[in-house]
Image (cartoon, rainbow, N blue to C red; front, side, top):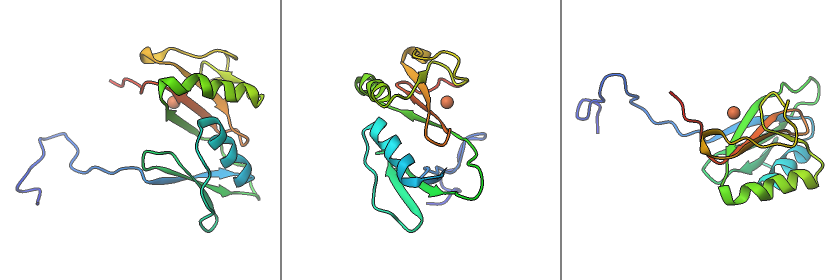
Length: 141
Ligand SMILES: [Fe+2]
């Protein structure tokens, strides 16, 4: 089916590209992958070369990759999670002694936000990646 047969209206994307995987840098791939998997209730997959995968359940894989010789640049990763699992995830953070925050700048410890009619929280992973769990996606303009 060519574009000529089904032209897209002007201004709309003509291609859909599903994110399939991305690399998450870590000092210790096992430690960091296990950390995220334990909080989100996921499992760490079998090593794939230098990568240690965590499948998120929506077709996206986080491939943990060790960066030992230079500092890990902190990134932001946000996870849309089921409302009914949010409290469990918060409990797991508390049990692990990990502080969560209502805001991305980490100024409101021990609190969750209510953005977009859902709930959300931020926490650091072992390498300082700013992780976010949220029950409603951002409403963007
Ligand atoms: Fe975010």
